Image 1 (cartoon, rainbow, N blue to C red):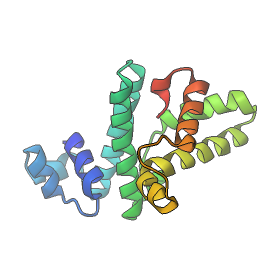
Image 2 (spheres, rainbow, N blue to C red):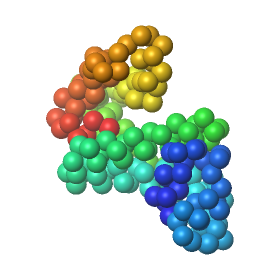
Image 3 (cartoon, rainbow, N blue to C red):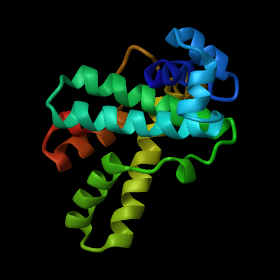
Amino acid sequence: MLSHAADLFAERGPAATSLRDIAERSGVNAGLIFRHVGNKDAVVVAVLDHLERELTTARESGMSRDVVEARAERSWKVIARALLDGFDVGRLQRRFSNVEQLVEVARAHHGDDYTARVSTADALALQLGWHLFGPFLRAATGLDDAEPHPVPNAVGEAFAAELGDPRRLR
């Protein structure tokens, strides 16, 4: 059910997805979702936790880069849509182990916690901006879609190099 809810949230956002929509896609009764998970906020929390666990498992178990990237993309889409729908993802999500891993790498490089956290946030903002708004940015600035663009690639390569494993990029 959480995987189907994540797909629906990525497609249309939590605000435009009802518990009935999730139940229909999952092949279960909507009352069971409410009884076992709770209201929409509780489902959003459960989906965010599910996506974080799913991405961590994919990354740590050595799944292919394509699988890790697909899971990361779905996670970022759900987070973006939830934020745009007014959900306080920073308050609702309970774990951020993938980001904490990046902070640890940055801490080793920068030496202090604050600078590590700010540099990680800056790098993620740049990467996510390109990842989520790349088609708009390319069109608005006249960049050709067929050519690779150095900014998103450079950020991704910097993450991969610092982490020592390209699968840990996202």
